[in-house]
Amino acid sequence: MEPVDVRRGEYQRVFDSEGLLLTPEVELEGRRERTVLKSGEATPSHATELRNTLLEFLARTKFATPGMDQLELPQLIALMPRTGRPPGPRNKPNAGFLESLFRELVSIKKRGFGS
Image 1 (cartoon, rainbow, N blue to C red):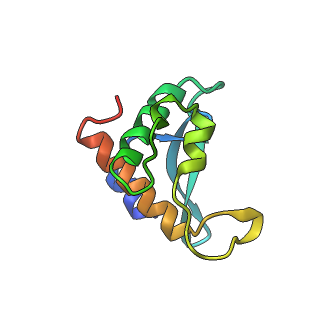
Image 2 (image 1 turned 135 degrees about the horizontal axis):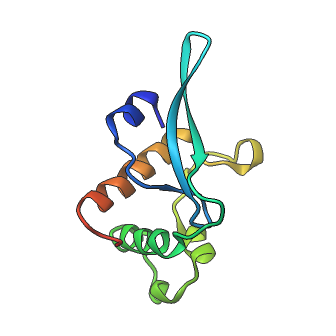
């Protein structure tokens, strides 16, 4: 997530993998800006919203599978596409891939899907 996009409000709803609502903020570190995610709640209460958003996203991609609407949130997250690159530190997907995925999810939410 680029600071400029956070300031523009590109990311309306951000969650962790359990449905914990996160708030993206821009912080100044020396002369550089960086994006940080702060917890917006003590316990995850948006798992259903995240699950519905992921279902809508997956349904529009080649990663859709029959019966995916019956899957639990961790199983849906496992279906999310990964980059073709070898895993990096801690098996994290490529940051550019994550940014494009977040943009797609935000785009879906702005059109009213997943709610």
